[in-house]
Amino acid sequence: MQLTLEFGGGLELLCNSVKIHNVNVESKNGAEKLTMKDLLAWVRTNLIKERPEMFMKGDSVRPGVLVLVNDCDWELSGQLETTLEEKDVIVFISTLHGG
Image (tube, rainbow, N blue to C red):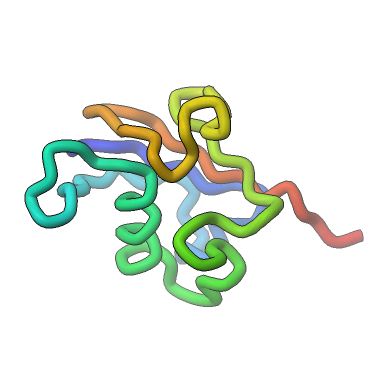
């Protein structure tokens, strides 16, 4: 499944300072649908190059990371259970900044 992943608010530093990634992600175990939980596991394994604890806590994103799926807050679509579709755009933005 072709997806566009965007990282901002400093999260791009965990991915070799690359903000936009056009990726092809397959569902786990041949499952019919790809969920955000599957995608986050894929991101941890394939994109995060350092300090994964700054992006994830357990199976989800850390508190303070805003997640948008096609410009819609993932909290409105089921968070980890959100089903992804071909060509979706997923944006991860850290809302935590130093002062």
